[in-house]
Image (tube, rainbow, N blue to C red; front, top):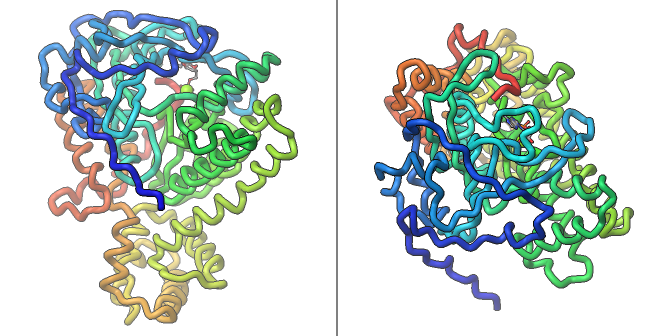
Length: 499
Ligand code: AMP
Ligand code: MG
């Protein structure tokens, strides 16, 4: 019998004595460029996340150190850190770009943390050989969005990179307007992307594709190591993890906004938060990114795009594998994704069993949500109020419906379905509220925190919002305002690729 090993106990360290154990740096030098952060004037800590510190093996109280900001913008290099920028390529909006790379991100190396090795990465710490026309910087606005959303997604149970801190500076950074610079420290076992493989494949260099695949398997998929079919198992597992991640996105109404293959993690993590959004009023074709004029990354396109991106990865693995074997693994997508999404939807509806009638029930639900542009998050949260015994609990949704008769008909069907499986209101409500969040990072909530930070240098709202989003499924009496659908002023908010 296999006895699971207890997680390794790590002693949390001061920031200048982290337990570095660089791995990516062991790859041949053509996979990256050594870089150094560019100093920022008078840095200050904008946000610090004590929850994430142990992941890096760092004691949470280190966030209060006077020299924290100096270290976490890169002005003072953490002892033991060896910053590098990785090279990668990618399909951007469907078009292959042969060389992208970390244009403003740099990995400091891996440390030993509470969940194993953890890559610490700065985003916005200055120019790298991959900066192309960019300035190597990130603005405070987009850094706050990335920080809050990584942590919100984690709390929702969706695989994601994490965020440790934001350090700001008054140094101006020019976007559509003049903004100020910030550095986010983000954490993940690895930031290797689909595009990291594509880079070598499209240069017709097979050996680095193999080296990278062996590295990723050795570090992150060790169960496949040494097996003759390891590359096949590897791509199969990436398909499975990606399906699980995308099902998670669809189930909470999350839209990534820029699903280019360079923004797809080889570990199936949500990565590179830019013009993302959470669905407010339900519109299946909603495009959250105003730079995405063709709607390539609309909400209802995400599963298809993820599959397309997996094909781009599969193509890059052709030097290692028989194309038919790759295709067979890629073709597991439909089943894996459908199963993952169905399981999530069943839980969202509080259904304990599967019934042949369920797809039709779900389809009609989404149709009436779309017809009345019902708020995605509030709809599912309020769905728990619907009772098996009668329509009293329907009100919370019905009152917002533009077609109450249609909703009544659906609610009656849903009630009958619940009754058929002997569902009990009290028990079902507890289970539904554990999967249907009350709080998500709505655009206007992020915007409020951003305005306070940028205009008044008041970072309190970032911390308050983070505290709410850490417990998205809890009722949190007193925090109702954070669960509200967007106010009128939020209708004019736009997010774009500019960050
Ligand atoms: P993204 O769409 O944000 O994932 O970025 C695509 C590519 O552009 C990546 O290679 C980034 O590193 C690079 N990039 C984005 N913004 C900047 C910037 N301000 N300076 C340098 N490179 C950037
Ligand atoms: Mg990116």
